[in-house]
Amino acid sequence: MKKLENNQQYFNESFDKQLMQSLELSDSQFEECEFNDCDFSLSILTQCKFLNCSFNRCNLSLIKIPRCRFFEVTFMECKLVGVDWTRAQWSSFNACPELKFSRCILNDASFFGLLLHELEFDECKLHEVDFREGDFLNSSMKYCDFTNSLFMRTNLQNVDFTESGNFTIDVLENSVTKAKFSRHEALSLLSGLGIELVD
Image 1 (cartoon, rainbow, N blue to C red):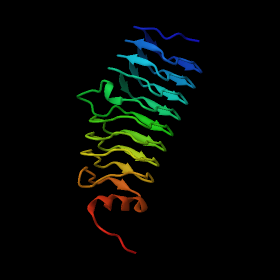
Image 2 (image 1 turned 90 degrees about the vertical axis):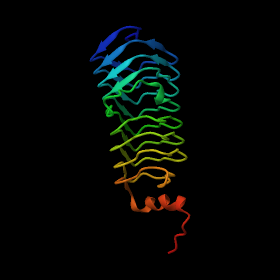
Image 3 (image 1 turned 90 degrees about the horizontal axis):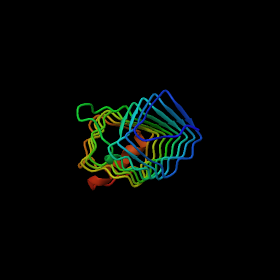
Image 4 (image 1 turned 60 degrees about the vertical axis):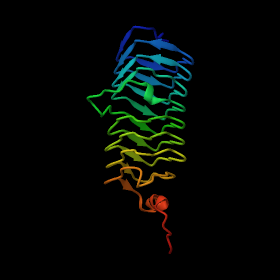
């Protein structure tokens, strides 16, 4: 088992089945690393950098990520419940961090006010997630469940919501120009307009 330590650089390393609950790690950098079946739940990662890394079947629930940086990071079949992504450090000159989530659980997460273009959510559970005030231009959010998630003054222009559902998106409060919705789910967009649909 590789021990993670502060102020270290890890390149092209693989971390497998490591139990690292409540880990406290700071100022370490991971480049082209892979994390498989690891448990980081309740950990505090401070000012760490993840570049071109992948997390597979990991538990990252309730992690804290103050001033962490993520670029070209993929999460596959991970549990990321209660993560406040607003605490991370996002580039002010590059709005496309190339974050990808596939078949993940991201319930109770916050993306409030973030400028994150071209995000990818595929077959994810996103219950009670805060997307208010965010800018997610050109993102892909397909086959996802958005039960009780919050959208207000959110830029969803050109976002692909194909086969996603259970969202409440007020078209008067959010920018949805050129966004894609499945036909049967698009009817929910009319709920905030005060109109009545009849067969």
